[in-house]
Image (cartoon, rainbow, N blue to C red; front, side):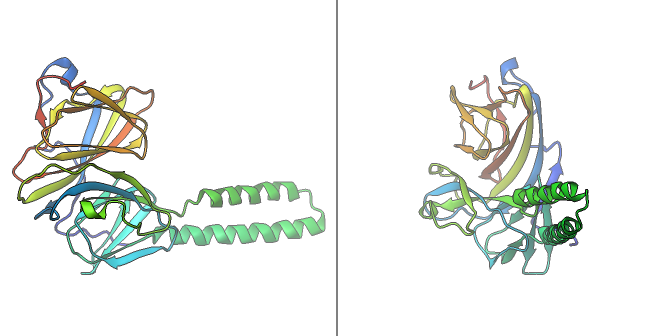
Length: 297
């Protein structure tokens, strides 16, 4: 499908954002072996009424599956694998690949679907049928190629079990507290994270944003605090997150939310690269990252 972005969507690889301060301060508070880029951001007029939480739902879809049409709170579709298609009521359609995201404004009608997986599913089905027919014909004729054909059939079956036709994506948003633990929208969904109640961020307007980090073994991000809440979602590896002198280990497909104005730093103490997606929500006039005097580790 032709990629078309909504005017309110600002997405993928906006390097060197002005809200990220220079890497200065004491050595243990400086970034080392870490790269960062903006994935997407979007404006939000107001938070939901009452107490709010950050919610991260994982919503895999098999080939041809459709979720919607519906509308809801503002938030991000962030894709972990495959391609997720988001079609909006005004006719615009966005194909979101792995590592990309699209922002959905509040109360905009849209549909989530897995269109790209449909073609792969048809091709696999055709290969499987052809392999079965070929195996039967060779077996009847006693051909010596039958074992090789059987290996091919098993291979196709293994690919089918792995299901490359699925897509897998997060929906990341700020929700009312009363939606905590609500029914999941699709059968295979998983609740990756629901935060503690967020501290009041004021009356708004607000800016929500996704950043992607890759941190090499032994690396770290800059120690900072934010004027808004930050949720750190681990997509690869194992993260060590320092908050107020305490270290918390967060594994893949888990997350941690840090309240506004709380010093934090992200470390990779493992042996493989660490991938993290950060969801942040802050007053539009506020700062995403402000240097702190020392590492919170």
